[in-house]
Length: 139
Image (cartoon, rainbow, N blue to C red; front, side, top):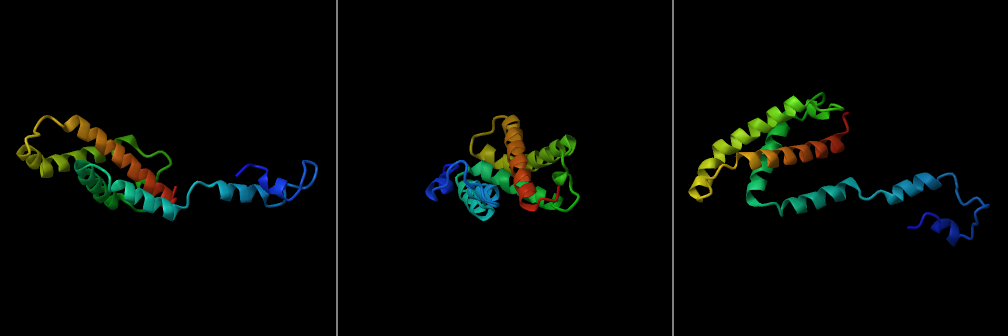
């Protein structure tokens, strides 16, 4: 995958026409690191390795973004609004604490987890927005 391997194999030298008409577009296509379908499968496999609570948060994030996934939504703005991002984060954290806080208390893990839960939700939310923006390209 050297830059001049095609030209060298065909016997071209610097002064010959090693750079054909489609040389650079062909190089860009060949060097593109992944195709989108392969990336989706790889991402789905890696998501299976998430810890249990992160999988729950990811599901809540996906459900919240499904409601915002339409053309013209703030998630597809060139610069998504921070206020709406943090408001959505707060709603997801509140839902997580309401639905799963009792289960955490039953497990004996009832310490104050709100700070790290908020940060995990922000990371997963930003990652999911990035994935949806790249998949749809509305912006």
